[in-house]
Image (cartoon, rainbow, N blue to C red; front, side, top):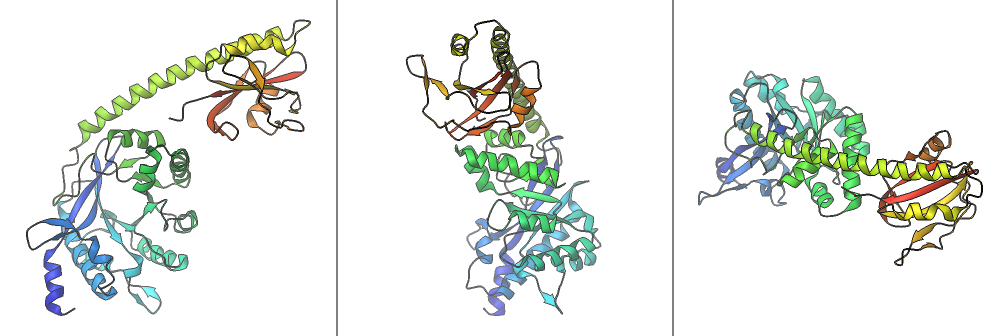
Length: 394
């Protein structure tokens, strides 16, 4: 590629900025820099193809990348107060000298007299060695820059890399979010587990690619701190005012809160009914002549019941698993139960020392393939009653 062609590419390259909003305040807190390309016909499109096409050598990609970044940094003077600019850095485009990375971003900031506190380095996908990435991150931090890991949940962002790099911000891969909302149970669990992992490691969570209210609500249910996506705005040529989406987010938060409160109220009511039913069985278990069949009429009144079974006080299962058939009768599921012990379950241990029924957390039942809870109570005849009930996966 000759100098004329390179200059032509540079002419068309410009930075656009996509806002990142904080869900607790509704304010824009940062803008991600995204490269855009002015085509000869005037159309503006993503410039990602310039950094992925093999026909462009790495040194040309590096020069184009630095050209866009320099333009973005010159715009920082126009940032709204108390916001930051995030710039994407591909570790594969970093130059090294004497085994140490050259931090071009810092040089650019110094040339424009801009504080590093205004910038977040967003590491994009790379197959580089973790040791090289760790050195790179260390150099950025020495210069006062914060670190974000992009597309967590994709091939690059394995847990071992995040543990090693200890980023300040973790951005969830939008593809994982889409899968979670398309009915993938494991993807839903994965997203919520990742957010929990991020919070416990001290990193802030940004949910990327939020395009619908449903995705926004799911992000809230996972505990994401920040959102980014077309639900609010695509990347635009200029920085938007901080409060651009404040009313929109306040409305969405109110809808979510009201729905969550209703769901919790219904769940509390349902749990109370379950516990009352099981406790009635407990009281009857102290009556002389009590037998297992005495509990079945009460259990039939429980909606979404999956099964019930009995153990001794040490957790050893004493009965088969009984489930309701289409005729409304309890039948043996036929699953192996001899020599099974449930004392290791946290809810069993709690129930063995409790006077009343205990309700477990939601978990995935391998036999039924459904999300459920278990209600456990210590009966007066030397047995424990365990009842599994189906719960919503939302």
